Amino acid sequence: MCVRVRVRVFPQRLDGRQCYDYRNIRVSFGADRGCCMVELGRTRVLAQVSCELVPPKPNRPTEGVLFFNLELSPMAAPGLEPGRQSELLVSLNRLLERCFRDSKCIDTESLCVVAGEKVWQIRLDMHLLNHDGNITDAASIAGIVALCHFHRPDVSVQGEEVTVYTPEERDPVPLSIHHMPISVSFAFFHQGTYLLVDPTEREERVMDGLLVIAMNKHHEICTIQSSGVVMLLQEQILRCTKITAVKVAEITELIHKALENDQKARKEGRKFGFAESISNQRITASKMESAAVDTNDVEEEAGEIIAKADPPSEVFATPVLHTPGTAQIGEGVESSWGDLEESEKEEAAEEEGESEAAAFECEKVETEDTSTLEETKTGEPIVLSDSEEEDVVILEPQELPRKTRTQTSSKQENPSKKAFNKRRRKKRTSR
Amino acid sequence: QPRGAGRTLREPCLWPRSICDTSVLAGLYGPAEAKISKELPDRAALEVLLRPKVGLPGVLERSREQLLRQTCEAVVLGVLHPRTAISLVLQVLSDAGSVSFPLWDGSGGWGTQSCPTAPSCWTPRSERKVLMSTTKGSCSVEEMQQCLAAAQRAATTIFQFYRDSVRRRYSKS
Image (cartoon, each protein chain N blue to C red):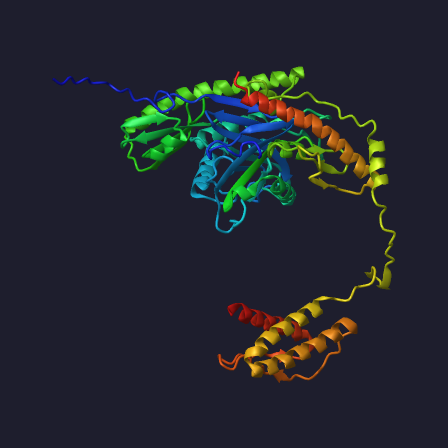
């Protein structure tokens, strides 16, 4: 007898989510303005906005400059190499640029200080800290939150004079942001039969195609991009945009709430920053109150150590001024390099001499030649010899006759000697 | 053995080390396969990467990386894993001065102390010997010794903190 039990398997994902579920999103702010970290499940992105006064681009003299950069640091995954523009990185950067810049979410005209002279450059740096899929969404959320959180210094223009105020003098002003584009990723499997929102890294590895839709809360599509090998039907895209609208509304609300909380904390003078948002939530986090270092008798201790130590040598160098800009400290010790080389060579020559007498003769001549030269070098200034003779040294008559050029002009002496030594050494090792 | 060395590859120890408003995130990977160009036949190649928050790593980051690498090499038992690579990635999360402290803290379990004056010195756990010291500007021998003595004293407090943290993390209860 055979009983067949048919189990209907609901498509459920590895982490227990349903198809259209997003992972948990957590937004935390740093101590600086314009710094935030977004955690999308275990994917983490850090964003930091900074600003600088720069001359504008010549074709747009009244518009501020925006600069976006996403970095995939090897901290996120060991496979990611630092400083390498991989295909993934380029495509992600391009997508984010389209999402932020081309959707005109930041009012660039308000960043102008003096037309054609000085504008603000807003730089958004994003760092991927942990890679668990869906970098696009995490980066887009982190980027827009950081931009909303950022305040630039206040500027006043009076005639020709431009004054940039410090935060103490005048409160910094926030950027004017028209809308908040947020991207939502959809992964397609089985030629579009299955659709998942917010794919994890494992799901991304096996997916057929990816559709990214960036939308703001007014249901306006800012960017749409489909990649991979999947043909999408019109209905599928429409369905995705509907899902996106719902998700974007939720995320925007969350962002507003997070920004509000941070604003409140800052106003009330409570502690804020990463250290504050992370500590005490897990057993792995531990905290220590600031403790003063007891430095009462440090001076005595240091004094003891110095008293016990050997006194420093009493040699004081008296610099000798030869000419303005050139000084000599101390006396040089005679170089021991030449001696070493000589003994080495002689040793080598002896070895050689056992087998080939002819080669030995040549060798002897050569060593004598160089040693005399070295003597002149260490002792007195080198006298330029004007003879341009060439010595031909045959090292081993059995082998191919090798030629060594030894020019006695002192400038070229050194390299040729070195080359000669090298050859000698090579020969010895080959035995 | 530094903390986190036994972790699997996909699980970097991701926890920020903070001191007041300065925090640094550290990730340690390895020992893993090394690139042929970086491989060392007798010990593990230690690679330290320090990422600034804004912009690309510059000369300051490079010099700090170098300091960290040289000191870490003296402490890590690299001989146990020849021909592998250990990479330590540090990301500055917020910089409110004396970044070196959490840097050291993040890079493992050894002691660190940076003085607000010119010199910064680091002392290791067990013998409280000075591992590394670096100065900027000039200081007299007395001042240097004073800083070292203060650093050694402060190290005890920090090691106690490490012990407490590790005990908390690995306690069964």
